[in-house]
Image (cartoon, rainbow, N blue to C red; front, side, top):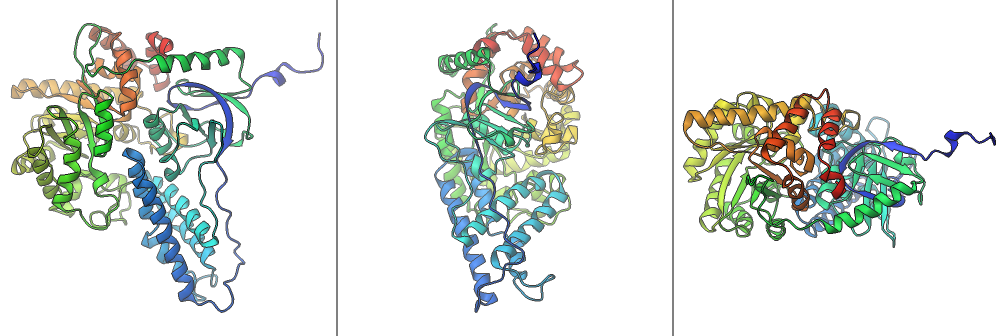
Length: 581
């Protein structure tokens, strides 16, 4: 009987996005508070105040914000610390601060502004400039707007915008999350992240994986959900449902049991046929390394050395670097630690090394290329790495980011030899390095695939843009083909030189248990990830043989798109459903 209520009216509200961290949870939504309100363009400076006084207020507010962010950075480790330190630099950025001070003058176009309005307009201009540059610099626009709001709040004597405070755990919803906020999320309070924009390699996605929080990004409309709405989040499927069904409630409860039952990683990852495939950890500090060792990591597959440089206005001394690297090496005596040399430029500009005026920084002087414009910095870093190795028992390998040609690989290997480092390698992030891996790897001992950058360069898709999230996906068959090409090239280089040429993966792709199976089948010889992902990846890998992994890799390679590749492989791995992954 028709009672006048349409069937559609009873359907739960559904949102679809990109799942970036697995998990199934139920919870109440709390929306990220809206940003600081825009200062009125008609505001006037307090009577009797001078331009100099208002300029000093802006400088002081910028310094206060920078100090606050640096203090927060000191309280966290790993990627969170790196993000906060990079954002802190923005608070004293000359483009932002000097631009604001110029707008205080009556001679400025449109007349004099108040300090608050001047900061607001200057921030908007800087963000617009960065957005127009595209790539990594467009990502920094988010940082600038976040810092702008913090400085205006400081000038007004208001608390800075941030994560909502609640007694009970909640699901955090937002249009997007500022790096400074995602870096200090408390996983005891925030049980999942859902955003209407962002991409699979955004700060939100990367830090959600590092914290082990289920997360879905690029889910249009979730930023309009009312506070207190109960939702079901499936981080693997990339779906959010308001008014969850009974079946979804059961699934969430089951995942909670599955997650707690997932055994700890034993520290020796083998496939079902006994093939050993080392699982390593991505770290940034000595504290990270200690945690990774405790989690069973078989070594370090990526030591990000930027943490030693990011909050500096001048290059750290060799002695300072020796101490920083040595703290990591000390946590892994007798085990491999792969050090990535300074990956400055693009999203990590440094005042003593990079040029902020490049028209396209993502394709500019970054990574290894900085040695062209600032010779000496890389050589001193290699000197420090060698000295730290000599003082510890770790087996140190060193790789350069942004290597494009065999000539560059040979030059880097020569620099390592001069420093006394015996195992040089390259990051494969630029498609040209994958395409010519057979010649590139004749010059060095190993390669490590940086799937984050390799994906964005191969697909010509900015990894921070939500609308391009489906393109910027490591499941893309074209990206997987480049991975296989690199592994095949390594085999050819090994045959030509008579020496093994291992190929690892240290990008975010390695932390996806299903994709880890595919990468193994493509010929990758080790996987490096956040320490939190080790147990899940190992639990899945131990259920497949190398032959089965190769079959599933072939399935993904021949899929028409990333969605189909992922779905086809997941359908063949029932262990994922059993473990709630």
